[in-house]
Length: 111
Image 1 (spheres, rainbow, N blue to C red):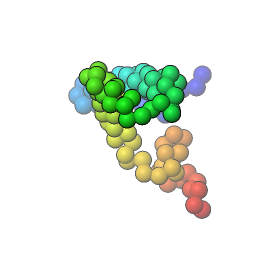
Image 2 (cartoon, rainbow, N blue to C red):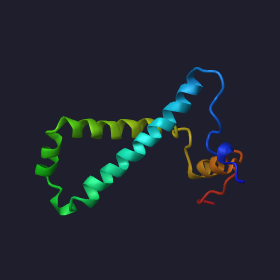
Image 3 (spheres, rainbow, N blue to C red):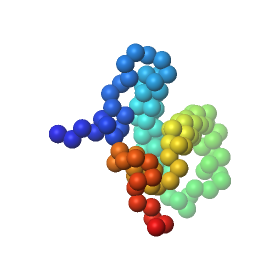
Image 4 (cartoon, one colour):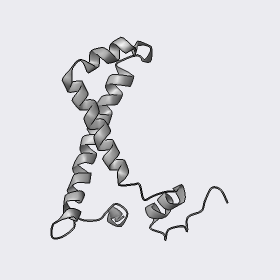
């Protein structure tokens, strides 16, 4: 059986503190982000024609505080999730991380 734990963070950190909090935060916020993205895609790209996305449509949507909260949550959770990947600076580093190779040992597209 394939053990994905070594590639995707493994099991929950023992003890407590920041590592345990961040472990729970990224898993819970990832599920919430997934649901928010699906709702966004359905509302903005499936049920509404792109030609109908006008200023009036957006202004009418933003008149509702729930849509503002929805968009704020989508943006905020996305930014915090992306900030965790900030140390991965190149595609080669991302590949090396995914394959559990030493940094810089993945092939670069520029070579």
